[in-house]
Length: 270
Image (cartoon, rainbow, N blue to C red):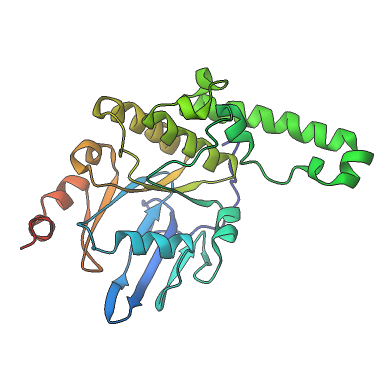
């Protein structure tokens, strides 16, 4: 992958199985007398798209907040690329390649699509007045490479034709793709997406997920997808976990999970 960080130690699964890039081990989180997570174990395999489902209050958001570092667990671990990141702050996780997007995209609406992606780049030597003044070639070279990288990413996510459009003029699906592009520009190789189908016309959900599949298959980007519009997205998933009342109640192939009696009961409130 020309534009993403390839160097990591990664956990290895038994022979014949894909590399586990992220794993939670017996995660526990309590809020007062409420146990939001009760020994939750999930695994994300490199280059695969994993679906996380469950009714409201099942613990999905808490799990994602723990994985991304926004809240600390009361027990258990988060392992990413073979490293215990349980206590790392969010920005350190981002540097390692773990990035989270949100249900409501947050672009700079008055900047172009390309400018939004370039804004996600880090380490511009031109921001250092000494380097900018003395080593002009350093930051010019950086900006040239950043531009090439941003255009390559936009091509991969299918937004190259929109590079000069204002981000505020994009459709819902295009905004989700822009979020992916910005995440990859930051060096993400593992992306957690919160309801990417939300606000997207059902006819365009297919196009959105075809782009996600392309990134997963050809660029080995790993995705964790939290989604309520299960019927629209399940067929694009490689694996699925279902949660209820703070616990994983089913995992496996998406169709098997969706038809699991415990999962059906959790949505019916029985």
